[in-house]
Length: 356
Image (cartoon, rainbow, N blue to C red):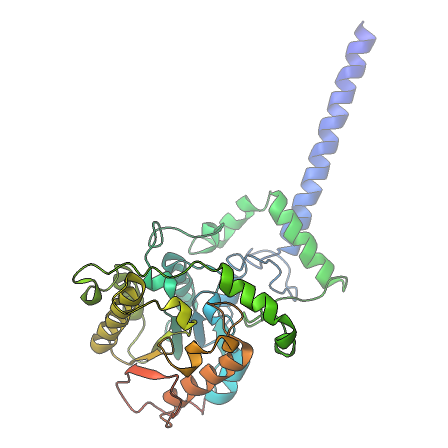
């Protein structure tokens, strides 16, 4: 009996030791690879953004000293290419746009960028449905899993969050890339095209039409009195974000184009909500210095042509090129004859940003 008891104790001790050794080894692997490049003592390795949830990859990019300008928004500004903007303006843009980013998330992103870059040259904020159609929790919480410990907390606290299967998964992905066994998917400037190659558009027209057919229609219920003159509550947060930047920073508040299908009918809730949102942005631009407000999301040839979109919300790459050309022209005080652009507020001729 004593022999059996001794054997059992030996087995338990061996099993516990094996688990501790294995767990310790895996933890050491994770903190050495440091998949999100946030730990203060990890070795300097040429890491890349590896995680599909950009909320985990943006903090390290936001602290990168090579950037001096930033793009904030949802998927409707993910196609704005830093390389194109930089070539035109002599800037070094980071695109921090994230799928389904709530206003609260965008404000947290701005905070972490400003801590590393207190006087950015240009900040672009995409004003789309996330800002214009307030939803429960949009001003107080994230829309997807959010690593709050990466945003504003001491760097050492990251070690407390590395003992997880998710961290192990992403450390493995980062390691596979480091040793050349995994292809890079996400750009080092935050840009990654998430739409199909544009030369496939004609072959995918059926898919595009299906996206329109299955998209929820806009709310055309008659708007209540006074709604058009009452900007959404999200505008207070947007105003606060604009006010956190120094007056020397060029702030661009811009409405990306969505299909006119989503605009709704005049007098309906959808159309009136958009009208109230424009009013809110105009008011912010009017009382904050150095703010440019641009609107591409109004009825016109761009938004009324479905061939400009992959679905009612997401435009094609040629449209993105058109938007970037218009925005850079406005910043450089060059004339823009594009009917897709409506200048809501342009307070000055603008400095020549084509020179660093």
